[in-house]
Amino acid sequence: MTVREAARLMGEEDVGSLPVVDEGERLIGIVTDRDVVVRVVGRGLDSDTTVVGDVASRDVVALTPDHDLDDALRLMAKEQVRRVPVVVQENQLVGMLAQADVAQIGKEKATGELVGAISRAPGGPRVAGSDADSAFEARRPESAAREEQGPSGP
Image 1 (spheres, one colour):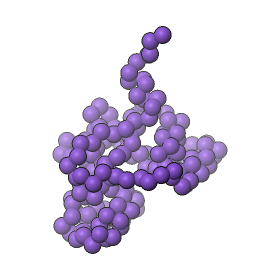
Image 2 (spheres, rainbow, N blue to C red):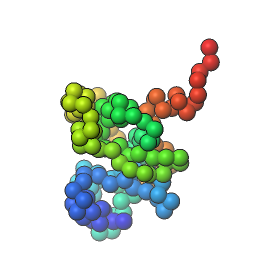
Image 3 (tube, rainbow, N blue to C red):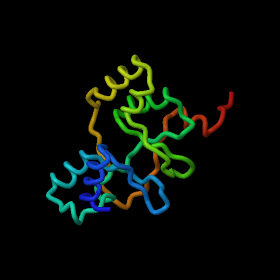
Image 4 (tube, rainbow, N blue to C red):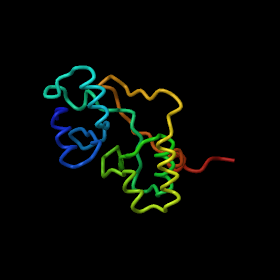
């Protein structure tokens, strides 16, 4: 898919990002409206010939359907992101969780804390890999990593 096609789809769906998947529907990145502006328009690239995979953010955090709302809130606040893909097994995309989704189902206090934490200025530079062919592995919350490793020894 070209960047122009992705931008058109974002407009039609009224969303600010799209997950980028391979042929097997495995998540390989996310392209945001900001990626389009900074990495395509800002660099003078042609949106009709530039493919989404070349400009998508590859350093993406993800949740699984087993995570609860608290996990999602912590992850979104820690990573300062407004959208998180939901994956199963080998990074197979099954959905997206957005800040707006949390606001609709979350408690007012938790939602207010999330919005504040996400909106805070980051502590350092946030740079996505520039190698379009680089390997991708979604990062999961630390609690999920501990659960997958099993109980720790004494």
